Image (cartoon, rainbow over all chains, first blue to last red; front, side, top):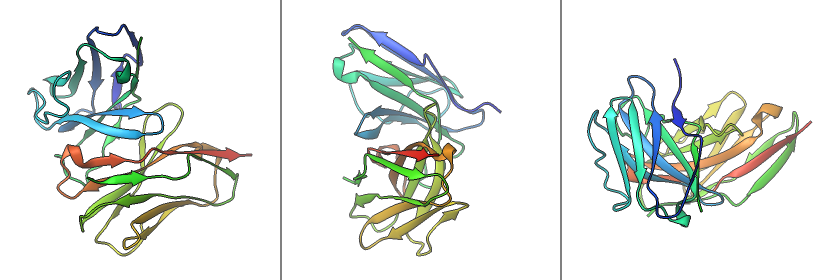
Length: 116
Length: 116
């Protein structure tokens, strides 16, 4: 079985443009997460979804970031009106079970976004 | 809000030697989970070891072990018999028991180099 994959691996966007990052999780996994990883600051969770074929329910952060889950094992992170501060690596992760603290999350290789 | 601190941005160890990576955290919760993740240059994060806060016994996974000091809020990772493949970024992470996505907190990471 393939692991979590993300595309593209690298993305350069002009400030103000919208971008969409894709994540293909492991088949059968229930919960999908998106993290933003910045050098020296670690990773912060942006959003997660625990249902299939539904929009993300976390509501965090609000505004320019949103996630959609058009298929059970696919998630798309959309960033509207990108800002230079959005430059980071965006990691997708999934877990087999629901969003419980002890459930292992499997991470994708990340997408490095650079906003010019 | 919980915070995770890794005070060593970079560490190096000689092959076959032992190295300890430090991690401290701040929380007001009594029950939670702690993790160490490894992120090789390919960027895919892999779970190394997990500790439940209610367990007094330190977790061990082959050459990896932790020193969990709950009162001191310390969670260090010891790697014995270091191998070249251990070279990576290591992230310490905290997660609340209910595990809602917002409560997964990573430290800034420690880059470990293994010298032949």
